[in-house]
Image 1 (cartoon, rainbow, N blue to C red):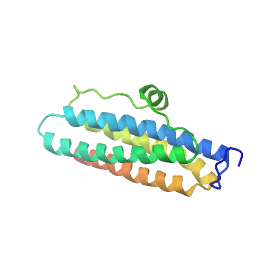
Image 2 (image 1 turned 90 degrees about the vertical axis):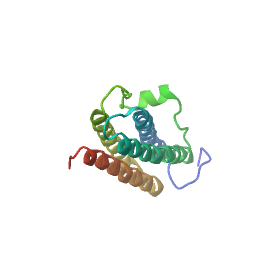
Image 3 (image 1 turned 30 degrees about the vertical axis):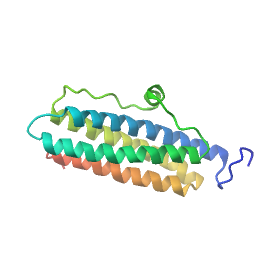
Length: 159
C-alpha cells in the first residue's frame, strides 16, 4: 500500500472509519468530563447512589477513550486531542454544577443517547470497509452507552 499500512483495508476506508471514530472519541470524552463533574457536584437525597453511579460510568468511559483513540491510530490516522479539537467534533455541551440531581441525570441520559447516535452513524463505514475490529469496538460502545442511558432513566423511575 502507498502509505505503508497493509491491514487489508484501503486508505480511503481507513480514513472514513477514523473520522467516525474521532467524533465518537470527542463525544465520549465530553460525556466523560460532564459525568466526572456531576460526580463531584451532585447533591440531594440520592447523593450516595448517584455519586457511585456516576463514578462507575466515568470510569468505564475513561477506559473506552483509550481504546477508541488507539483504534484511530491503528487505522493510520491521528487521534484528535485537546479541548478545541474535541469541541469542534462534539455536539455535547458542558455541564452545569448548579443543576439539581434529577436535571443532571436527565442531561446525562440525553448525552448518552447522543453518543449512541454517533456510534450508530460510524457503523456503516466500518461495515462497508469490512473492518470487523472497528465494528466490534462500536458494538461494545453501543452496549455500554445503551446500558448507561437505561440506568440513568431507571434512576428517575422512567422505563
